[in-house]
Image 1: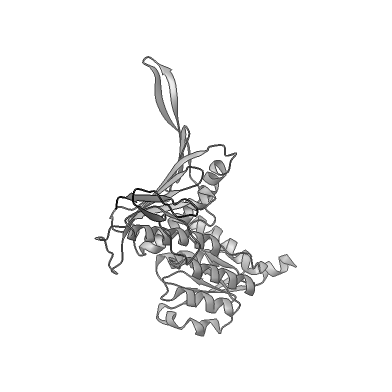
Image 2 (image 1 turned 120 degrees about the vertical axis):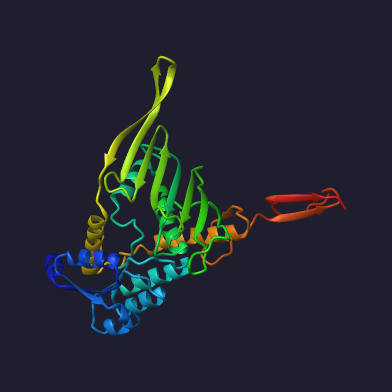
Amino acid sequence: MIAERALATTTIALRGAGPEADIWARALRGVEGVEVARIPEAQAGRLADHRSLRHEALAIASAVTDLEHEIRAALLEGQCVFVAAPTALGPRQLLALDSLARRRGCALLFDTGLVADSRLVFAAKMTRGEQALWPPRYIRSLHAGAHGTTLDATAIADIASILTLTGAPPTRVSATIPRSSEDEFGGPDTAMMALTFDDGRVARIDVSLIEREPHHEIVVVCQQRSIRIDALDERAPITIQASGRHHGPGGREPWTETVIEHPLAGVNDRAAAVAEAFVSAVRAGEDNATNAKAVAEAALVWETARASALDGGVPLPLTAPGEKPSRPRLQVIEGGGGGRASGPPPELTLVGKR
C-alpha cells in the first residue's frame, strides 16, 4: 500500500517568485509523481482561491505579509505546509502552529537551512554528547552580507544551526544590537550574541545585513582540531583542520594541517533532498513531521537576545515563551547589613549605609 501511495500524484501549490522560488519549484517537480502549481505573485494575496483547488500541500518560497495566518489557514484545510521563505515568527506562534499541525495530521516543515544538511549532521555527530569523539570548546558563527531578508529571520535561522550542533538550548543569552544601525525597513540590521551552556561551552553568533561581501560560516573549535562549515564555498563546504605540537629544531613547535576538505551537496542537491523529505512526509501522512518546535526554540533564544540588548547586553536566563526574562534579584539592606529579610539568599545584595 505504501508503494501505491508513493506513486500517486501529489499536488503542491507553490507561492513565490525569483531565483529561490525557481529552485524550489524545480526541486519539487523533480520528485516522482509531483505536480507543482505556481501561484502568480499578483495573486499572492488571494491564497484562499488556490486552497479551494484542493492541493495536498502548500510551499511558501517568498516573504508573506502574514505568514502565521497563511500557514494556519492551510493546516485548517488539511494541507501540509513547507516554508522556504524567511521565518520571523515568535516562539508562541510556532508552538501553536506545531500543535495545530499535529492535531490535523499535517506535515509542517520550515527550511532554516538545517534540513538535509549533511555538513551539520556530520559536525553534530562528532561533537555532541558526553561521549563525543571531538568535545567542542566553543562555537562561532558569522553571517554577513545577507540580503533580501530581515535580521529576525536571519538570526533565528543561524541560532537554529547552532542549537543543532549543541543539542541543547543555552542557559544564558547576552546580545548587543547597535541602535544606530537600521535596515531599509527601519529595523536593526546588526547583532552580536553570546550563548552560554550549562556544560561551559560558549557560542558566539554575529549577524549583519549591511556588509557587501557575503560570508556565512560556522567554526566548531575542539581540542586540537576545528570544523569549519562554509555555506558559500561549493568546492569545500566543510573543512577539518588538526593542530598540535611536534618536536623540531626549536623544541615542541605548533603545527596545523588540513586533514579533510569535504565537497558535500550543493544548494540544488540539498533542495532536492529537502523536497524529497517533504513529499515523503505528505504521502505518509505523518503528523509528527514538523520541526516547528526546533524553530520555536531558536526563536525563544532570539527573543531573549533582543531583551538582553535592550537591557544593555546583560546576560539573561532562557525563560518559557511569553515570560519576560528577569535580571538577578536586587535587595537593598540599610544600616550596614544587620537585618536581612528571611527567605532564600538573593543573587545580588547591595549594602548601603543609612
